[in-house]
Image (cartoon, rainbow, N blue to C red; front, side, top):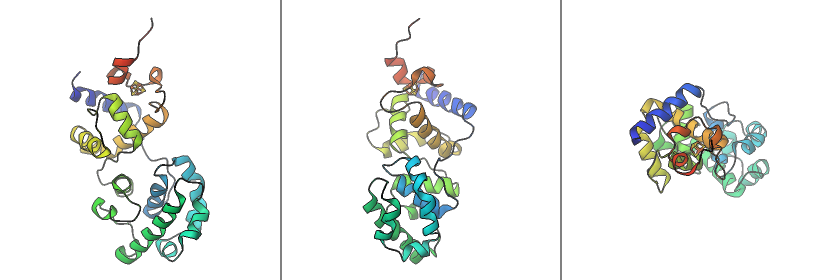
Length: 216
Ligand code: SF4
């Protein structure tokens, strides 16, 4: 199977079998989404969803968060990973929104990436989820799953993965493909022991073809 055919089959399967593909983070507006995605770096969406309701209530707008302190924010986020750094990032992020963007979250990846605590992955997620900008964010799941399936040729960095995926996947599917691959990595193609026996795309998967012996 050529790589082009693999892409076609894999994403046809996702389109047909996973018509709904969206973030599991809970948020009501772009500001809350930005907070949640910053907190979700190196942390699970589940943990982030537990702590964000109280955080959103305490800091409902960029203006309120901007005049707060990292110490005050820390109390709400101490159970996520890297709470010290993330507290500082959240306050500085809010300050930048107030000072540079009139208290609004900017819509472009180029602007988002300049915000404290926002890397390329976070910028891509916020731009695509909140503003429908075609973007394909590569997190640890997308990176691993893409290599396993054979969508990438042993990409060494998330940026290499992003370049390869966006080369082959039609632009209209970039945002969905991000969620498809994340959810597939979270629930089926899990890091330690992929559940190949219940995987709908095993027929097109390079790892499956090389490693799984079918006993008849
Ligand atoms: S067949 Fe196995 S390795 Fe391949 S995508 Fe499915 S779960 Fe992952």
